[in-house]
Image (cartoon, rainbow, N blue to C red; front, side, top):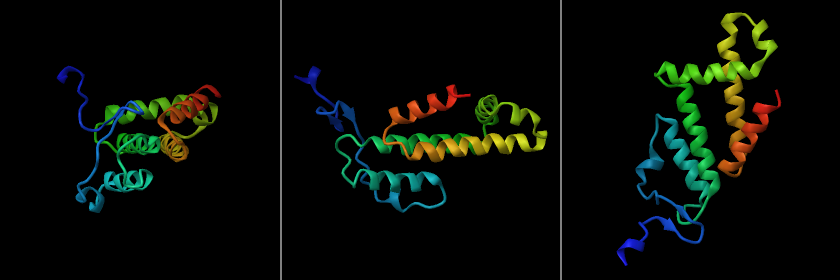
Amino acid sequence: DAAGARPTGYDAANNVFYVALKDEALFRGEGDIQYDVYRQMRAAAADRWEGFHPHTNVLWLVYVLQKILTTKAPAIRDELVAFAESKLGAAFDAAPPELRRAACQELLRRWMREFEQCESSSHVLRCALLDLYKG
């Protein structure tokens, strides 16, 4: 029955979709962190794309955050930096203006390093929420 057919890249046992990254050029690329992320994802999935490999989602989330921090779209980056400012508190408010952006970016980099240690995207969310609400 075509109505109940699942697309290629669907793992019914885990109810997840996956993309089998078979193009070796993705793993040999240089000059953009995206290629490093593809190599890390391949290692996390042990080059077996079928099934559920939750850490690959974490790697992609960190990549997206890195791209936002380095984007040429200042509105997106500035919104993220403003959010980080709101989490830094009194120490940030007392800092000289020329040091504030660096402090925000360092907070965001610290979050990225912490997120990379998470095993799944839901774990990233829990870590982020705990960090957001502790201050």
